[in-house]
Length: 613
Image 1 (cartoon, rainbow, N blue to C red):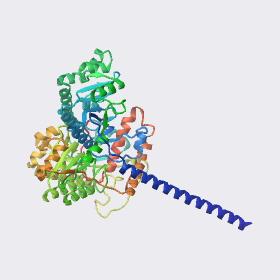
Image 2 (cartoon, one colour):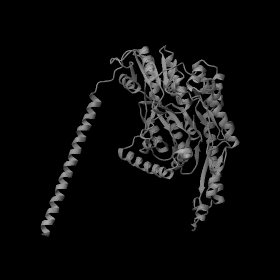
Image 3 (cartoon, helix red, strand yellow):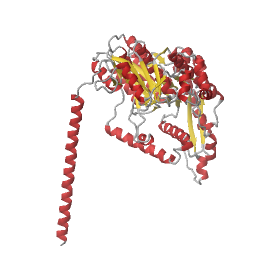
Image 4 (cartoon, helix red, strand yellow):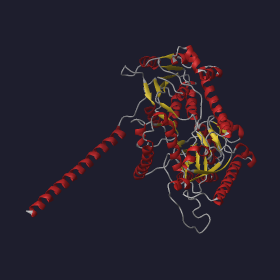
């Protein structure tokens, strides 16, 4: 009886094993067939074509960035099921520039409804490429269901700007309001010890104040004023309006709405911000009028950016020489990391590989970073310096932000290029040390022990910070600031005192930085690439984009770890993520995520509390 029972169990288990084996084999062969099908579709599909007389459609989805990265899984949840998306600025600029002299492209169409933003300087760089396209005599048409400020700034360069009859143009100027935690931290008993040099170095102020300091207010007012003048003047020039008319509309939107009977679309039309209203079917008819119908006879003759770039790439011929563009986007951190942050070891390796590659004759470092680790910043700067010593030109090209540590790494270049609307400078240094001894005491938790020297255990956040350790930290910060001044003075051919005058942690627009001697030229990425090629004596070259490569296992592990961090923040804020507290919760989450990335071995940071509009 028992033997029969065991035989039955054995047969059942063997049957399940066989079924599982068959299932695994079936999944394997199905995956193999699917993979082969994908490869066949990729390598044997017909090449895309550009119908003669087409309109190139520029309809960016998401945020303009210098380098795209894989979104973490929770991004889908936060976006309500649809990823916000990133669009690589260089791809859009390349498509528009290629289309300028392409006889198959008859017009450029801009549709901005899914554009989120991406920094004023990035929008301005794309705008400049569109203006160059216009100079060829080809028309540029733009439409939006409604226009946010970023969307309108891009669309306003067009020959015709269309708006939905029930839409609006939301021009509201620029602002920066921070959240300050001093009283909340005091109530919790948390002390934040700050060590800094530079009265304008405001990154630590949210933890030590309840309001904006006078110095930060002064610098921010000047910065935003400069950025707004750039945006306003560009809009006024494109729309053939007086700058004062744009200011009047922004400063008295209530009056403009009252004059239009509350109709926001009419107010925009009356001001001259748009040319006409059009519904979706009227817009389609206008495009057919401009470029004709596609072969199917229903839609306008058009081609999107992705398909057009595939055509352009297929027409390019390999060149024996290259200019390498290395993108430094995000917070500067120590160690090795893939895209998303500027990791010192990773970028040192990328720059070294470019230096040792015989085909690469020059390097352009494209910077979009507010700074971070002082240690990692110096690693990167030194590799750039070695590249120059090896005879290869190095050009730094600043995107939306290249401040503090972002400026430190730029100082390793032969030339520094910035956009007029770049946020740069912030030459200063600081350190933060949190102390939790009081919250632990209130909970009845004691911390005690022994040490063999005064500094052993001195930087333990569970214990009060020893005055000697605090003094040592401040001395290190002051030394770091002097080092920063010396690095910049040597790179910019200035005295230390001259650098100190424009440093102290203050941020500047790229336009202002040019006048102060902190940058060499104003221009976009293409200007920097041209300058690098000229220094290298290149007439025929191609542009390559080295970037960190990680294995599938590394990518999965990193995403799992980041998802765990995100879940911690997500669950902590659940119930507060909607309603009036959403903005505050979002800011705390962003600040926490940034602080968690800080890993400088000396706890010294070159970081700017600055974001571009």
